[in-house]
Image (cartoon, rainbow, N blue to C red; front, side):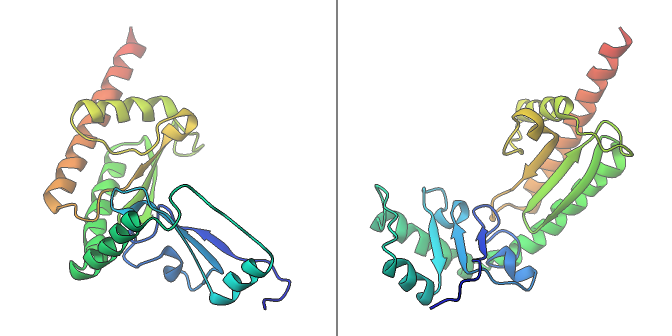
Length: 209
């Protein structure tokens, strides 16, 4: 049985299988007591998982803990999850996440050099954040321009931001699929660059009127 210490729980719904290793915690030398997974694990099928030790699982049972859902232990998504894990290994997608992630990072940092509105670029593998600011010194988020650029990207054929609601529009979360090609990343960076140019030009024109 565990002692009375606190449990360390990591939610890796977005980070698992995307950062060049199976789990984000492997990059940082820590290991959680409980790990939650979803998104990439299902390969497009709604699937989530809770991973823990035999000891913690037994303790939960002993205390009568119960969590039930309509599709708990559903064999179809479970089979899909196993297939996804096989493909990740067979096609060496962890190594690909590192390779394509480096290309994506280089492209985003090039955009940061070109456009003052980009205050920060950060991430690992194929999960990156781009921070939009009104001023790099004050680092005030610019959700209005961020949302406008996101919308312009869609008009140009690029869906690149997971959430563009409220102030969250000021930080793009860019997460290409593990199978993304170098050509697709290059095209995405080019469209993003064009969208930034278009939106900033339109904003300057309105301000001058």
